[in-house]
Length: 142
Image (cartoon, rainbow, N blue to C red):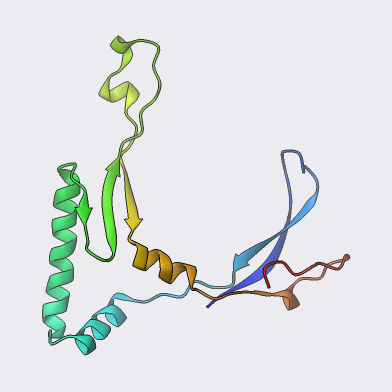
Protein backbone atom coordinates (compact mmCIF):
# COMPACT_ATOMS: atom_id res chain seq x y z
CA UNK A 1 0.00 0.00 0.00
CA UNK A 2 1.16 3.51 -0.75
CA UNK A 3 -0.24 6.12 1.62
CA UNK A 4 -0.46 9.69 0.32
CA UNK A 5 -0.92 12.98 2.12
CA UNK A 6 -2.36 16.15 0.66
CA UNK A 7 0.13 18.99 0.18
CA UNK A 8 -0.43 22.58 -0.90
CA UNK A 9 1.64 25.15 -2.69
CA UNK A 10 1.18 28.50 -4.36
CA UNK A 11 1.88 28.31 -8.09
CA UNK A 12 4.72 30.72 -8.99
CA UNK A 13 4.10 30.69 -12.78
CA UNK A 14 1.60 29.65 -15.43
CA UNK A 15 -2.14 30.01 -15.72
CA UNK A 16 -2.57 29.28 -12.01
CA UNK A 17 0.04 31.84 -10.88
CA UNK A 18 -0.68 32.95 -7.31
CA UNK A 19 -3.31 30.25 -6.84
CA UNK A 20 -3.05 27.68 -4.06
CA UNK A 21 -3.09 24.18 -5.54
CA UNK A 22 -3.40 20.82 -3.83
CA UNK A 23 -1.66 17.59 -4.75
CA UNK A 24 -1.03 14.12 -3.34
CA UNK A 25 2.47 13.14 -2.24
CA UNK A 26 3.56 9.79 -0.78
CA UNK A 27 3.98 10.00 3.00
CA UNK A 28 7.16 7.94 2.89
CA UNK A 29 9.02 5.71 0.51
CA UNK A 30 9.19 2.09 1.57
CA UNK A 31 12.27 0.13 0.57
CA UNK A 32 12.80 -3.54 -0.12
CA UNK A 33 16.49 -3.52 0.67
CA UNK A 34 19.21 -5.59 -0.95
CA UNK A 35 19.46 -7.61 2.27
CA UNK A 36 15.71 -8.29 2.23
CA UNK A 37 15.92 -9.32 -1.43
CA UNK A 38 18.77 -11.74 -0.74
CA UNK A 39 17.00 -13.25 2.28
CA UNK A 40 13.80 -13.76 0.27
CA UNK A 41 15.60 -15.43 -2.63
CA UNK A 42 17.48 -17.70 -0.19
CA UNK A 43 14.14 -18.73 1.39
CA UNK A 44 12.52 -19.45 -1.98
CA UNK A 45 15.41 -21.31 -3.61
CA UNK A 46 18.14 -23.79 -2.75
CA UNK A 47 20.79 -21.09 -3.18
CA UNK A 48 22.99 -19.92 -0.33
CA UNK A 49 23.24 -16.28 0.69
CA UNK A 50 26.70 -16.09 -0.92
CA UNK A 51 25.37 -17.58 -4.16
CA UNK A 52 22.59 -15.01 -4.34
CA UNK A 53 24.97 -12.12 -3.60
CA UNK A 54 27.37 -13.35 -6.29
CA UNK A 55 24.53 -13.76 -8.78
CA UNK A 56 23.30 -10.20 -8.16
CA UNK A 57 26.81 -8.73 -8.48
CA UNK A 58 27.37 -10.75 -11.67
CA UNK A 59 24.01 -9.65 -13.06
CA UNK A 60 24.94 -6.02 -12.44
CA UNK A 61 28.31 -6.48 -14.15
CA UNK A 62 26.79 -8.24 -17.17
CA UNK A 63 24.04 -5.62 -17.58
CA UNK A 64 26.56 -2.77 -17.33
CA UNK A 65 28.88 -4.42 -19.87
CA UNK A 66 26.02 -5.00 -22.31
CA UNK A 67 24.72 -1.43 -21.96
CA UNK A 68 28.24 -0.09 -22.48
CA UNK A 69 28.28 -2.01 -25.79
CA UNK A 70 24.95 -0.40 -26.74
CA UNK A 71 23.00 -3.64 -26.34
CA UNK A 72 19.54 -4.16 -24.85
CA UNK A 73 19.30 -6.65 -22.00
CA UNK A 74 16.31 -8.96 -21.52
CA UNK A 75 15.82 -9.98 -17.88
CA UNK A 76 13.19 -12.68 -18.40
CA UNK A 77 10.00 -12.02 -16.41
CA UNK A 78 11.27 -8.68 -15.08
CA UNK A 79 11.60 -6.76 -18.32
CA UNK A 80 14.41 -5.27 -20.32
CA UNK A 81 16.95 -2.47 -20.18
CA UNK A 82 17.94 -0.49 -23.25
CA UNK A 83 19.85 2.67 -24.02
CA UNK A 84 18.14 5.63 -25.60
CA UNK A 85 20.23 8.47 -27.00
CA UNK A 86 18.08 11.54 -27.71
CA UNK A 87 19.10 13.62 -30.71
CA UNK A 88 18.67 17.33 -31.39
CA UNK A 89 17.14 18.45 -34.67
CA UNK A 90 19.65 20.19 -36.92
CA UNK A 91 19.16 22.31 -40.04
CA UNK A 92 21.55 20.35 -42.25
CA UNK A 93 23.21 16.94 -42.39
CA UNK A 94 26.63 18.57 -41.98
CA UNK A 95 25.60 19.88 -38.56
CA UNK A 96 24.78 16.40 -37.26
CA UNK A 97 27.75 15.45 -35.09
CA UNK A 98 28.18 13.40 -31.93
CA UNK A 99 29.21 16.46 -29.92
CA UNK A 100 26.50 18.85 -31.09
CA UNK A 101 23.56 16.57 -31.84
CA UNK A 102 23.57 13.58 -29.50
CA UNK A 103 22.46 14.08 -25.91
CA UNK A 104 23.48 12.05 -22.85
CA UNK A 105 22.43 8.39 -23.12
CA UNK A 106 19.56 7.36 -20.85
CA UNK A 107 18.75 3.90 -19.55
CA UNK A 108 15.13 2.86 -20.11
CA UNK A 109 13.57 -0.07 -18.28
CA UNK A 110 10.52 -1.66 -19.89
CA UNK A 111 8.72 -4.00 -17.51
CA UNK A 112 7.06 -7.22 -18.67
CA UNK A 113 3.32 -7.71 -18.20
CA UNK A 114 3.73 -9.53 -14.87
CA UNK A 115 5.49 -6.48 -13.38
CA UNK A 116 2.96 -4.04 -14.85
CA UNK A 117 0.15 -6.14 -13.37
CA UNK A 118 1.85 -6.07 -9.94
CA UNK A 119 2.17 -2.27 -10.13
CA UNK A 120 -1.48 -1.92 -11.13
CA UNK A 121 -2.55 -3.98 -8.09
CA UNK A 122 -0.90 -1.71 -5.50
CA UNK A 123 -3.38 -0.23 -3.05
CA UNK A 124 -3.46 3.56 -2.91
CA UNK A 125 -4.97 5.74 -0.21
CA UNK A 126 -5.11 9.44 0.58
CA UNK A 127 -5.02 10.54 4.21
CA UNK A 128 -7.42 13.47 4.35
CA UNK A 129 -6.75 14.20 8.02
CA UNK A 130 -3.49 16.08 7.40
CA UNK A 131 -4.75 19.08 5.40
CA UNK A 132 -6.90 21.98 6.58
CA UNK A 133 -8.98 23.29 3.72
CA UNK A 134 -11.55 26.09 3.60
CA UNK A 135 -13.63 24.31 0.99
CA UNK A 136 -14.98 20.78 1.24
CA UNK A 137 -13.29 18.43 -1.19
CA UNK A 138 -14.83 15.56 -3.04
CA UNK A 139 -12.92 12.29 -2.68
CA UNK A 140 -11.47 11.27 -6.01
CA UNK A 141 -10.56 7.67 -6.65
CA UNK A 142 -11.62 6.47 -3.21
